[in-house]
Length: 101
Image 1: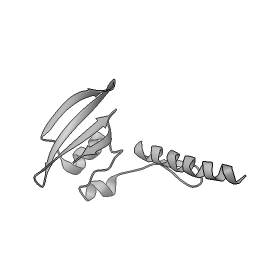
Image 2 (image 1 turned 135 degrees about the vertical axis):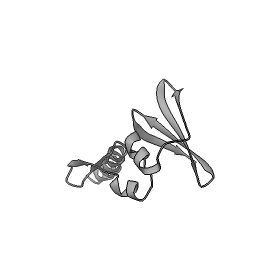
Image 3 (image 1 turned 180 degrees about the vertical axis):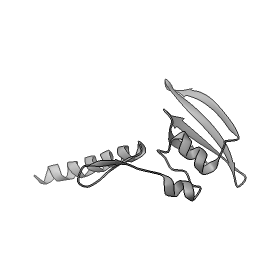
């Protein structure tokens, strides 16, 4: 029985992380609700899982946009100049998946 407990804890945590990346949060009761990014937008921050509309509301228009293909996946790439640093955001299916600083 103890072996199964150690397997379930990482599995549950993995499911939680996957849910957050898609904009959903898994609660301890097993129910899921959509995560909103309103506080991040108000604070002018961005977070993984935001859609393009959320990022535009938070940071405004990017200085450059383009599309790239990586391993048969098409990403939309936005570049921002934040405090004299170029930050590149990668979107896959309209969701922010990676931030390159």
